[in-house]
Length: 261
Length: 242
Image (cartoon, rainbow over all chains, first blue to last red):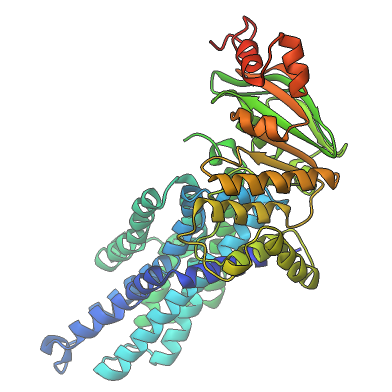
């Protein structure tokens, strides 16, 4: 039953890894946050005794959310908009494959790259923690693990949204415009919540993206994140990802994919 | 065997195919002949299940139903630029064979056969980026015939090819026809149609204008050549093309 999606995913992963330039740019996106935070952590103002590094640690969560969105961006662009541009989508759709399986296969591949981006980001932050002497209000290995688990569903949602946008575009260039804007979304939400904490509402914790940002901040502040709340947020995020994928499948079955604008 | 009955398709207000009916038999090459924009590509795309007809029906080997049911029964080459440039020829073929559910052992052997038939052995393990038009076309044709389909659909397969490649393609299509395959191809090139087709379906402005062998069409129009017959048919008041 999952054979065709897995075949598609395997091909997309191999194809994506051979696109060396895209792999390097995704890696740079993932490591951008640790690099910036690492450089700023060298500042005497941060290193000085008694100065709290919490704003810096707060920014980490923003960079981590960005990494979850950036890791799969290039593959998402290439895998549908790129295929339309190179006219290889039509030969694929000539095969007896349900459109949902096509989207599922491509989503698996994009998700893998998104999770890899997230993993590189967290490894980078771990190195920053170990080498800079920065401290959060929680033990860093536990913090990194909690961040990984918390942001993991968001990476899957990001992959599905990116695929949907890619389905709506006819060229890599067009897709790049929209997906680059999408990467700024977690940055905007994160900045808003970091600098306007008064705007928060209790139900924000159940909103995908906003909820993950709030949970990350609580983790870094050393406060507990209710497990049930975290699981509910994860489930809601995955449900939204599934819904977005169904919309993509529907779009892939429309005439405009093959013909017209 | 492919049967098309009263097929219709419009894009917005523009009618592209109108009440088009024809049959393509097994063991025969059927050519869809028409000028640019006549509706040949749209017709083939509807048969292949990637565009939805507004009206009419399509059956392949007497199976109508959902597009996926039809797609199991044909191989198609509708756009020979659509191969994966970061994969080798062999990897391109294996990918589509796996998507068709071919078993690994038989797939390996079948890929070897197809590479041999198409003369692609020497470049089988090269990535397809930078391939010539002929090499790309052969790779895409290999993708279309890999699973040994009973029906083969080709959209202007000789466009942009050099003379030796056109000749080898024509020889391959004749061999497939002689093996009992139903081959349908669209073209606006009379040389292709004359050299290959057992039956010609002439389309103009999305409608069927005439069908039969090249000789039949000459007989119907009282002309000495297929070119004259085509001009006469497509410039008739019903065709309203000229």
